[in-house]
Amino acid sequence: MVRTGRTTHAHDGDVVVFLIGMRINSPWRVRAWLPVLLAMPGVLRELAAHPEHGALGARTCLGAGGPFVVQYWRDAESLHAYAHLDGGLHRRAWQRFNARARAARGAVGIWHETYAVPAGHHESVYVDTPPLGLAAATRSVPVARGRERADQRMRLRGAHDHPREGASA
Image (cartoon, rainbow, N blue to C red; front, side):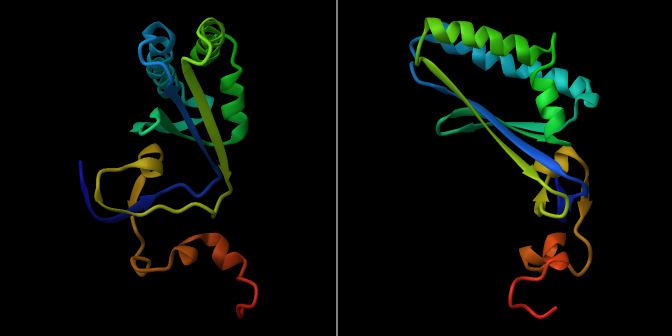
């Protein structure tokens, strides 16, 4: 459902943004890459069913290099703990990938990037959209009055707490 006007996310704490994706290097080697592709939906369902693992939300995307997922986590410790959880779908999928990757060297690649963003150093603005990104992972709220046209640096609490060098306090 589209929310008209400007909205933002309602999350004041730390957040970890985790990007994970795959690259199909040999499209004709379907048996090498299809299991990798099919593993992620199950992992995302498991995370959605168990918020205690620390995942706030996720969005699946298709980029020029292949499919990838943007995940939002409450902290890096939760992400790491889930990645190594005995009996979790991710760990089993990772073990299967490693076994298949040895048999089909170079047919499919995987990648991930992790960004730990401290409280006060993340911001979002959405205009006439349904809740997306961090707002979908947490909660979408209207942009506070007087902040509609604010400079991005001023929307980040860190800019208020730590004036730029040479700026008057």
